[in-house]
Image 1: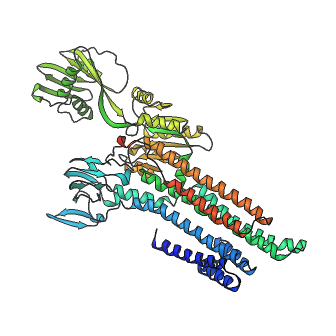
Image 2 (image 1 turned 60 degrees about the vertical axis):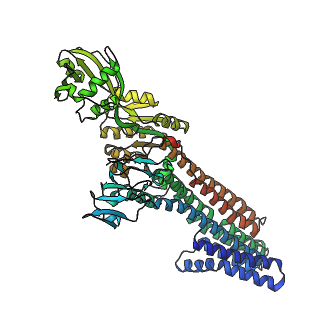
Image 3 (image 1 turned 30 degrees about the horizontal axis):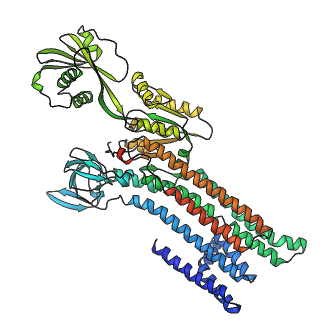
Length: 627
């Protein structure tokens, strides 16, 4: 609770004591205490009404409360006039508290901004602002400090707390040579880091910018409420005026009775429940999503995300790890281990990712003296002598050019063929492995009611169809260039159900055009390129596809809460408005219809801030950022 909120609450309590004393007494003393209570708690409402009228803003909540309560006092209803103002201010306090809670959830994220950086210059360690550090400089991050700028670990090993960025409780171990992102907290040991970019371009700066700008993009539902309040408030004022004047003038009934009904009508009509609770729902949803490692750039995107029924995925780096690994060893004869040993040694000097994957699969120390006369044949593979025997290792074209018959291998992945002494010796299948949670992520989307899942990839048809089959996707399109992906998404947009949206999920710079074209662009932020993150509407701070279902779940919960508040507030208002116009509701019922409904709607809106991580903690592995 802020200092200002505490002072406001004390003011309400003092007014409540005066009001209670006035209700217990009789005569002039009671009237005096009730008037003092009214003035003590309501003077700012009356003053704002006057100031707004002077500025031409007549029809607002301050005007409605002022007219209604002054009218009640004028009719001698001191207790009701004071009660309306007291409970209205109590409702305002609850609204303020709820908004502060929601803002606090965002403020907690803002704490990721580091205040200082320890940079090494001319042999001295200087403490400077992160904005003063250039790319390529060396900085020291001590235990307990936040990493101020993205970079690469030069010395030291430690564990990082990434919870503020990713919503994950599991610390991440970092070692020399690993990339590290700003905003994480160093936990166990000092780290020397070489910065890879300026502070303004670092991960923490991008996150803060996205969150700070999120409130500027309003959902259609919020726009409806703004337009509704603009014509609704003047309408109810004139309706109350007609209610106060027409029956007495036309039917000859007492003015006092109908003025009282009109005042009750005004109190009931105050639209604060809608004006506060609906934007608060979206604000809370964005804050809750941020704590879960899902950054939503605006309420409009949160609303669109809730309507997704078609999701289109990029393949490499989105559903797959973007890292080659040996998935299958098919020897022509003999043991698989012998074929893998041969391939690993021949690839011993290779810098290609395929060679690295073969060496990793072998997993033992290499004796490169066993390899002689190594030659690289461009576009085909390697030729060498291994253990005094001539070896060929490469694609089908390499072996056939040397007269080696190669069997037809079933499709899927990249196949590396081997021949020894001019005879086919077998092959290894190299594939980009699926992410650990990719299959469960697609299943989770199915459970959420997503109707169509599609994968777009530049890979071969065999590789794409195999991955799609493992994931259980509905469609796969292969061999696509970036422009082709945009065309496919446009085709899907033309076929989508009215009122539903299409989301595209990608991570690479070549995904930026299609991320911008989709109804909702979702970027994998952890490994994602800057261009993809800029073009996207939603950024996942970890590279886990399972976060997509979590983001949709948060969006649907938020939109559902906002709709509940609209139906609840308007329904109760209309009911009590009718009762007030008929004389069946007094100012006490009006207080409930206004303040009570508002408080209930606000507490309902606060539920949007509470989110649960959809992925078990033992599967959450933070990942480094790359350009």
